[in-house]
Amino acid sequence: MNTSPKKCIPWDNEVNFAITLSDQDGKILHMNKKSESTFLKGKEDDLIGKNVLDCHPPAAKAKLTDLLKSHETNAYTIEKNGQKKLIYQTPWYENGEFRGLVELSLVLPKNMPHYIRKN
Image (cartoon, rainbow, N blue to C red; front, side):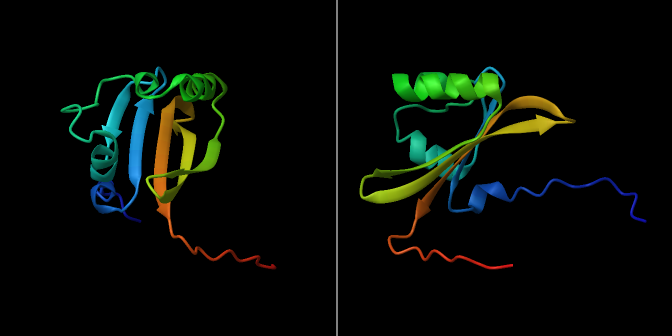
């Protein structure tokens, strides 16, 4: 049995999708490099510590506010600047306690195959 402490591998900074982590009040705790390059765009030095609600238009802000209260998952696709993206917003927990939301933003290939698999 391995009793050594688990090491955290910093895997998220070199993946090709954006990861944004916020706390239960919407304060941004972490952005991987892709998230920073996607959302900062030279407008700000850093969004860590800012509220994710302030980064969205009214309809999206209302949806995020609801997600922070309901602890549900929200998934949808968008098209922006000629790229189709999957947005996946879901709660994260620590020891079973709701701690906030994580948002994944993935660029989808133009001709992404779709498979229906049988057991």
